[in-house]
Image 1 (cartoon, rainbow, N blue to C red):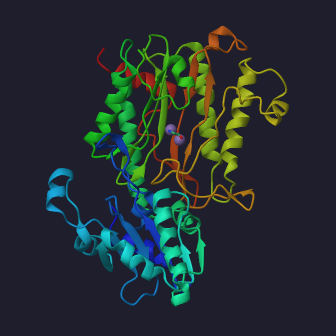
Image 2: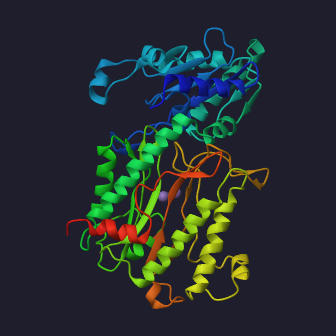
Amino acid sequence: MLTQREYAARRRDLMAQMVPNSIAIIAAAAEAVRSRDTHYRYKQATNLAYLCGFPEPEAVLVLMPGREQGEAVLFCRDKDPLRETWDGFRYGPSGAVQQFGMDDAFPIADLDEILPAMLEGKSRVYYAIGKQPEFDRQLLGYVQQLGDRQGRGALPPGEFVDLDHTLHEMRLIKTAAELRIMRKAATISAEAHCQAMLRCRPGLYEYQLQATIEHHFADCGAAAPAYTTIVGGGNNGCTLHYIDNRARLNDGDLVLIDAGCEYADYAADITRTFPVNGRFSREQAAIYDLVLAANNAAIKAVRVGQPFNVANDTTVAVITAGLVDLGILDGEVNELIERGAHRPFYMHSAGHWLGMDVHDVGDYKIQGEWREFEAGMVLTIEPGIYIAQSDTSVAAKWRGIAVRIEDNIIVKKRGVETITRAVPVERREIEKLMRTAQR
Ligand code: GLY
Ligand code: MN
Ligand code: MN
């Protein structure tokens, strides 16, 4: 868990990058209706969670560097004994001050009255426009009010600047405390994959492995899966975002599981692929070892100072050469790489930033050039090969084989740390683990 000191440091860092006489406004995520009066499990907007950890909807964080009456102000729901009986505890403004380190806090119902006055005369408003349409309208309404009253001496704010750019650069580089949490999220997730390997046998349904995985997440105190768990048996593994998870797992097929938990606001994102019956066939083994070689080579290639695309380029080179060796692609390797011949079988890229969002924030390019790795960045490495059952361009023995192997790595001053290897990745290790299960 993060300390109040860490959140305060984040706010201080952000405010230090803001121009004088400016204001930053960060709104909580809206609740989403699932069915009539019941909601999806609430997920706080990660920008707000990053800056103060406040978990409730209907909240707005306002930062005003240098303001004498207090720089960090939270608007939030008032205490309400009746609503709290139904929906649970609310911190209320006094809780926001006492437990979230705010300098001041007001009921959200007072936003209309107080926020326009805070905006008045500011040289610059930092705000991520276009992400929360309802709040966008509310905020622009306040600005318009000030504009309408300009003749009577009101002073609308000077300019709007995207907050995300500054904030996301901060979020991209993780602190030691964040890395501790991410290791924990990764370890819980890796253990869950082990549990699925131990339970798996022909005749089970995909959703039963999903249940095993998510049971472990919940059992370890993780709030939820960081994204919808993917369990794809056989050809279902070829559907990259397969979340149906209703099919039976067949003897002789592989099963691809892409699952990670969210722990203390941070995501893990792991994929393992293993044989339903515990033994890889010759063809499955060949594809598996190729994907693993690509994964390992990409992890090795990532280090401080290398450009982001080195990981992807490495996986493409390994996979293309390997597909030629297996007779699935035909031609000269460099020429095949040049024309992207791998794409029918490896149609996504090698990874993404990881953090509070599973596809985390942070630019991949700076002024059109791939950005270089820096210590404290966290990313996934996730090459795959997917040969659809329907792909008649490939010999029948390869069809219906889908393999992705996804690990999470921390870029360190020297080299990288792979934080997801509490679940085996070597073929022999997987088979060994699966053999230990009671059958
Ligand atoms: N689970 C989504 C991804 O791997 O990017
Ligand atoms: Mn994934
Ligand atoms: Mn991923």
